[in-house]
Figure: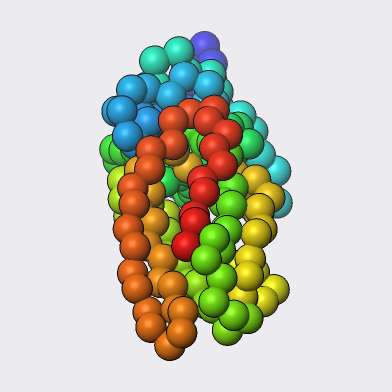
Amino acid sequence: MRNWILLTAVLFCFSCNKENSKKWTEVHVSAKNFLTLEPITDISIGVYEKDALGSLEKLHSALSVDGLFDFGFKANKNKQYILSSSVDLDKYYAVSFLPYTDLYKFQLNSFEFTFVEEAHLRTHYKNVSCFDENDHIYIYRPNIDIPEYNGYSFTPMPKDGCLDIISTFSKIPCGRYHYEWHVTKNNTTNVYHDTITLNPGDSLTYLIEY
């Protein structure tokens, strides 16, 4: 009888030590539309445990219905924990987004992912009062609403002069874009401005006549 009691005590203490090697970890994630602040509903989030050999075990996984995720688990100090997220990048531009990130064990982890739906834009460049082949146009088009999306400067044509060129459609984030173009004719440069708004799903051809 004494041996049985001793074995029980040993097993119980081993169980306690194993339990004490873990601590509670929380993960909170929100996914929003950067422009409207509405929740992004078609994003999935998963929490994985990674061992020393690199094997992953899924602890939690969910597809959001409200853009919010809350996970809790007991983290082992000898394991690594990874937050993995998946969204359709053919539909969204990720303003702030981590495909996966290491979680800090034994504490609260909070993340906010923001996205913008995308549209299609092309530009028609047409020189309507061509002076000569030295006519030159230079365009700058930043996104006003998304500082994280860099605007860019370019001379899109293979050559300047008497142009009538339509670019191909490009997929870019929705929002407001400020066009600025510099036109040089007869050694005189003039600057023009315009602002357009791209809504989700738009396919817009923007005409620049100069």
